[in-house]
Length: 512
Image 1 (cartoon, rainbow, N blue to C red):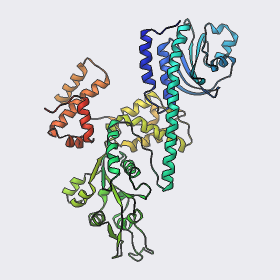
Image 2 (spheres, rainbow, N blue to C red):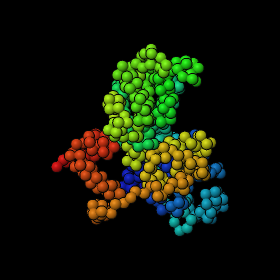
Image 3 (cartoon, one colour):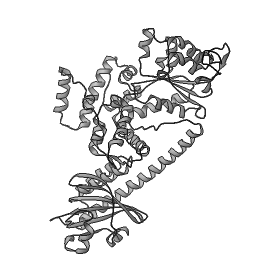
Image 4 (cartoon, one colour):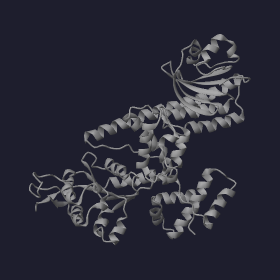
């Protein structure tokens, strides 16, 4: 009876964690399964064949001499597969000496000497086949079959979980689509993975259920509009209008009419009366993007709406009452504008009841790949392409880039890659990223040299440890500068106070 060695058991435990670490894309899951197979059993090539309802579909993934390939190859049907589709593993050595085997195996590669086929199955259902191949002097045996069967059992569970999660996500998407279409509100996909954004969403949901004004701040392109949408979706006004206004796109002469409406004859081209955005948003929510661009002479009218819920159209003395929840956003420093006399202090305080600061993309690297995959799906559909994922080097390039333009730049990069790339995989060069833009100026002072020395001389040389040393040193410095006020430190760092507290616990930081 075959038994797994202690070393193999340890490897399988690690592999189980790895193949279940991410359910974003099925091709990535296939590759993790194949890499695990090569780790467990000596072989020159391994591939994955998909099966659906007992029918062989395609060879979809292959690793040959550590080179990954996403394929979409039709497989020639054979009686050999009938055995595997019944749920039984099959291996053969010296296969090139058998004409039946050798002709069958040429569709995978030339001069294959031995093969091992193991079904990935759960109960009576076969999800796919893991195929291992060798060319010379390396036969497969019963123990190899037993080890890969153990891997296949783990893989079947992972694929079943993947299918369930994707089914649930599709149902959620359908429900969201019905909700949004019923109110003619276009809602963007919202992807959350990083702890900092998960913590922020707790705050967002608490803010959503109130009627207080919200001020969203952050760098250009961080996705302030997406957070405004989440506030709207989680509010009790979700079935009411959601009106967006890009204040930066409106000229001073048109802004008053667009926001507050006008009466017929109010000015030369006003041939008929027109409702403004606030009137259209009555009962619902209005999103004022780039609110810092509203000129000073219009700010009192906005202040009056917040205070009294009333305004007048241009050319009218009659007050109109509205019930509108205001969400404002800006990438400008409104406090500095107040000090410079460019923004009313009372209006700032009225808007800033519930402040939300969105951290830049570089501060939440865990979000980069999930967001990029969302964009890839979007543009693959839009351009009629069949992209299935990113190569390993492409994913590394996305993670290594600093994204000065934040989510908007990532959106553009993926769109560009879909246009320039060759299906089915996006490669690193398809992004056309500027290396110089991704670099940060390195200060060569004594403090940085000392920090680098501490990291380099640490016994633990892992990237995780290096990042933790840096985070602990940097957080300590900010906390000391803020006199250990966690709220102020969070504002400087662009994160919520709760996340500062969480980092302090994780990094074992205590107030001195």
